[in-house]
Amino acid sequence: MKVLVTGGAGYIGGVVSARLIAAGHEVVVLDDLSTGHADAVPPGATLVIGTLRDTSHRVLSEGGFDAVLHFAAKSLVGESVEKPALYWDKNLGETLALLDAMRRTDVSRIVFSSTAATYGEPEATPITETAPTRPTNPYGASKLAIDTTLAEFARLYGLGGVSLRYFNVAGALLDDGLALGERHTVETHLIPNVLKIALGQGDAVKIFGEDYPTPDGTCIRDYVHVVDLADAHLLALDAVVPGTHTIFNLGSGTGYSVRAVVEVCREVTGHPIPARAEARRPGDPAVLVASSDEIHRTLGWKPERDLTAMVADAWAFLSTGPR
Ligand code: UDP
Image 1 (cartoon, rainbow, N blue to C red):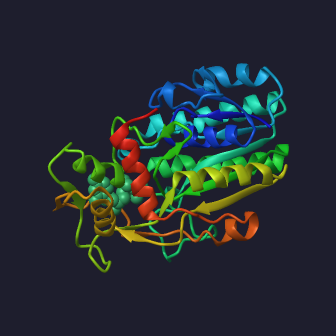
Image 2: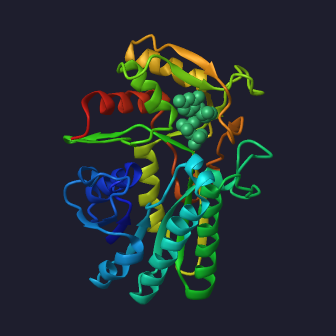
């Protein structure tokens, strides 16, 4: 297939692009490089620099596209609370421009990068796709609005859409001389922040809250390896059905506490990695664990790489750098 990957210069979009190319697909990346990196676009993909609003119609007009994989987004929860209009404009507004360009050029399949943040504070664990969606911040709300828009476009215009709701993504792609991993200027994610302490960048891990109602008092999250996540996109791409919108959760079904993650990082790096308790980070639910039964049942997807593999690959990427 010939596919457009929006946000393909970012962490997840870059890894998915690499897996698409390895599977024989033709990949065009559209990215404004606001947070992505041109050298995260894998060899073999064509990079077009621009926003979805200004550029998606021009790129799709080139012709021959079978599908869009849509990753381009603002994704910092804290920033979304400070600047909600920016998140509605960049996430929902630019997606509407992309969908309009798809309609005008007759491209009718899309796989969308949605998020567990659409659910908000869960009533029950593990979270299934039928759980209530009550996002607690503009980031999650804007992603939920896109899921809703895709369902409406499926009903009205015959669009085929799959929304993949990611839980916590970690690890890196290390393959054939390629190394693609997390390179956020503002790093909020736990695993890279812990590994940076092992690299000597900072004196101690900050553990945001040790008084949650969990066995060790720290938050529990469901981590999935970025390569497993990427493979789910390839399965979803093949399974898109025109006129329908489907939602799948992507997680491992297993939760790890912040303390447990720090311990795995110590084992993998051989570094003592000091840690200290800090105040809770506003808006963090105590436990977020996915039920991925639906995607397992429907597409046969299940994660192959465990937390140790995620940390080992993230560590290999961080200690050697991108290539
Ligand atoms: N966390 C932490 N210290 C850090 C970064 C994150 O204690 O330096 C905690 C955070 O409060 C949450 C968990 O680790 O409970 C996962 O956070 P992350 O930002 O990686 O992902 P999120 O679950 O917020 O999407």
